[in-house]
Image 1 (cartoon, one colour):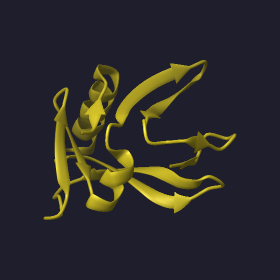
Image 2 (tube, helix red, strand yellow):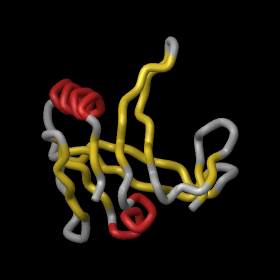
Image 3 (cartoon, one colour):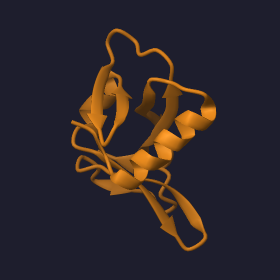
Image 4 (cartoon, helix red, strand yellow):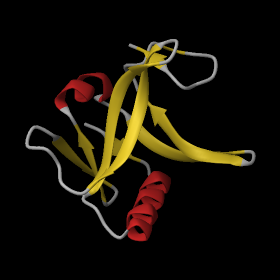
Length: 106
């Protein structure tokens, strides 16, 4: 199960509306960074047949099967820290993250 916080849901819904539509947001992992994996987000117009779809706070999150193993239980949040704002991932499977916060290990 993948969930979206209310703040993240509002941000995704606004972004989809500004974009002109879409089915939802793809959450995936890719091999990257000093810790092994990095999160990847992209808007989706049409899910692939093997994708898993999760509904949370009015937003559809699309996850491929390989990423789901690493992301199961993750909550996507949207936070403001000082002058910066962006998505924050609360992934219970992550065992470590790099100092810059761009990658993580499982």
